[in-house]
Each structure stands twice: as C-alpha cells, then as structure tokens.
Image 1 (tube, rainbow, N blue to C red):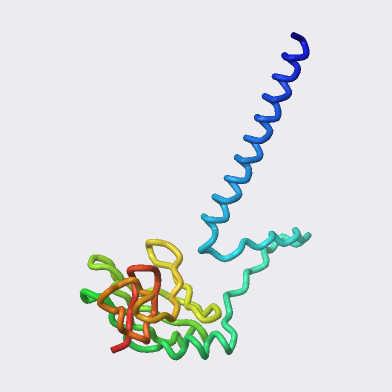
Image 2 (cartoon, helix red, strand yellow; image 1 turned 180 degrees about the vertical axis):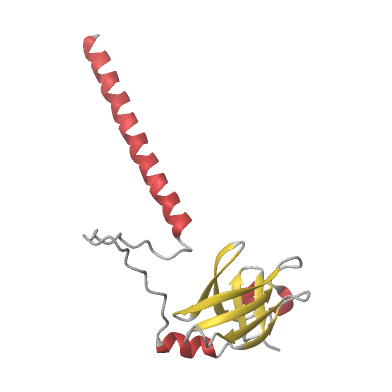
Length: 162
C-alpha cells in the first residue's frame, strides 16, 4: 500500500512538472508571436558612471535600402478610393519617407516611414506596419489580382500602380 501511494505521488509530481514546462513553452511562443512584427529587443547598455543619458541614434537606411524603396515614390491606388502617396522626406535624410494614406474607408493620415531592407516600416494608430513590394494577387484583393506592380501592408490592404 505504501509503495502504491509513493508511486502515485511520483506520477503526480511528474505530471505537474510537465504542465509547468508546457506552460513555459506556451508563454515563450506567445511572446514570440506578439513580438514577431516588431524590431528585436536590444539588450540594455551597461550603466555608466555619468549622470547624463546617452541618446539613442535615429534609424538609418543603407544605400541598398534606399535604392529599392526610392523606386516606390509616387501615387499608388487601392480599391474603393483607398490610396497611398509616397514622397521622400529630404529633411530626415535618405531612406526616410512621408506616406499619405487613405487606408480604410474611414481612416487616413500622414505617416513617417523608414527603409528597412526592401520594405518601409511605419507606425499608424493601428500599430507598427511594414510596406513591401508584391504583385496584385498577394494583396488579397480580387480587384487588384491581375496587377504586377503593387505594395502590400497586410492581406486585404494593398496599392498598385495603374
């Protein structure tokens, strides 16, 4: 009887340990999914003995980034009156853009974007976004499916050149 109780307790403890491991794995996956659209977190710099904080450098774009994304400057049209106008932000420097968007039937705005590889990253009220070159089919919009020169923010939101 004593042996049965001991074995039962060992099985229960092993089950608890497995649940804790699965919970930790689930939390790690959830964090990864939550952070997948964002820039990778950077380690905090070691504290310095000075009392003045070190300013963070502004994001910079490489010449390759600029060459790919400068070709996107101009007007792009979506469906149902949605549109995107990309212009270079000369004041901010190479690889910086001003995006004028009507991105839903009710939402429009002007946003600042920065080249990142072959994309432009920007933030709107609905969160951080990434603009990338695609074809019409990749926009997920049947009205743009036959287009070849398009930009997509996310499925269901795309803009093409005429």
